[in-house]
Amino acid sequence: MPGCFKKTLFALASLISFVSFILIVVAMGTPKWMTGKILCKTGADLVNATDPELVKFIGEIYYGLFRGGKIRQCGLGGRRSKFTIFPHMVKKLNTGLHVMIIMFLCVAIFFSLVSFGFCILNAIKVPYRAINGPAGACLWNFLAGGFVVLAVTSFMAAVKLHRLTERIANFRENVFRFVILEEHFEDCFWICVASATAHAVNLLLIAISGIHFPKIKTKTEEVNVTAEDIMY
Image (cartoon, rainbow, N blue to C red; front, side, top):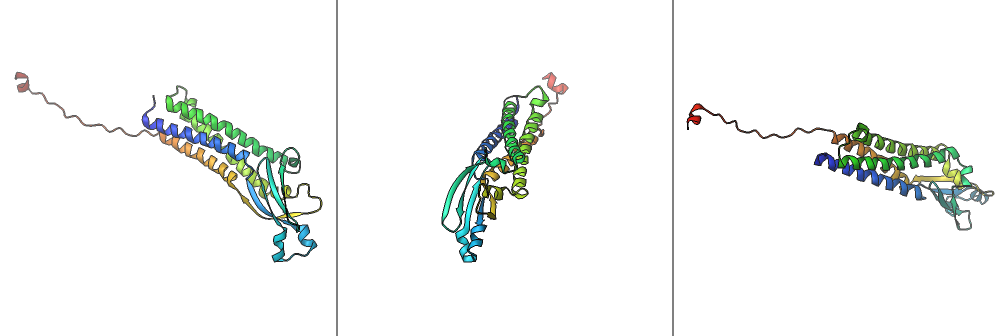
């Protein structure tokens, strides 16, 4: 049976792995990975809008991995619309990269659950096989965190290098053209970053669990038996 200190660390690590699993699932299902402000360039150019008038042509956009929405401002008031990435819009995006982001997160979910199970196992007993022990728990946490990092990095590449926000904003816009004024990574993106950080914390906890602290031994007074003591 593992010691009390080791049990506590692995119990905490299992809780962190489960929280990471929940975080990734929530992040994937929420359409708030990115928000931004979009300018209706065509409308502003038609009326030669100056700085005070540009407000009438600035809308908003938000999106996640599967859906999103935007407010179009082209001088006649705001028009709200919602959209889904699959199956139509993904054809206009970098399909391979977008699918890879989703796959990375799905694999990370799987490894988070495996990490959760291994941490529970190590909290209950000392496994006979090394792969089932702390080494295995380290491996699954490293893989889970690594795939989350790959997903986050790929999403940043899609936004910054492949102009993801601009492509989404101009989807099925035949008359007006929109340009991006501002874009910000939102809560769901940072939730994934927190998930990767959680697995890094787990690696630290597992490393600490392998440290053997010296045991404090109390010295017992040695009893000296002499010949006189035996006589009495």
